[in-house]
Image (cartoon, rainbow, N blue to C red; front, top):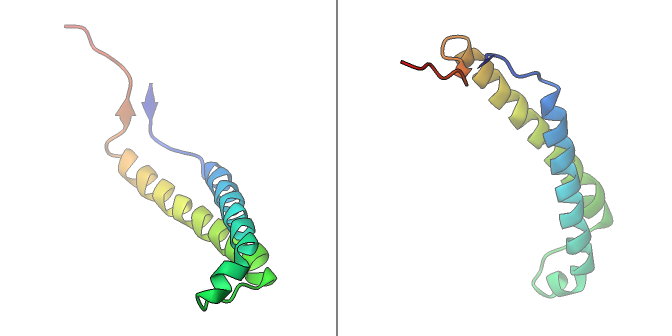
Length: 87
């Protein structure tokens, strides 16, 4: 069995995972906004719940698309194989 190509739909999972992780980080950031304000860090609802998760999800998705494209390009010449030959 040779793995010569990964489907680009796999990147959607990683983009969604990045979106959820950044949303959790935004929730934590929002809950600590008073502490962060004393250190001079401004936290708005838009940046915590919209901007960071959406940008994180898009960047996570695009990163995985690039990684999959590089793998597919390299795998055409050097496929990963799970075949074990007995001598």
